[in-house]
Amino acid sequence: SSPPFISSPANRKVIDEQMDKWIHLNFIEPSQSPWAAPGFITYRNGKPRM
Image (tube, rainbow, N blue to C red; front, side, top):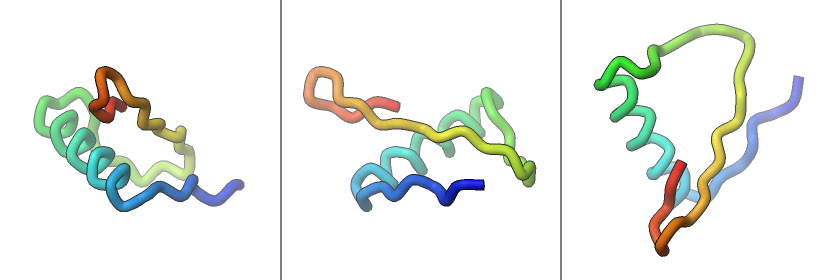
C-alpha cells in the first residue's frame, strides 16, 4: 500500500470543504475501508476544483 499524497494546507482546505459538502448532500458517506482513491485539485477560471 502506498502512503497518501501530500497536499498543501490550501488544497487540504478545499478537499475538506468539498468532502463535507458531498457528505451533507449524501453523494458520499464516511468509510473505514482499507481501499482508497486519490482526489486531485485542478484550477478552472482561477478557482480550485476537485
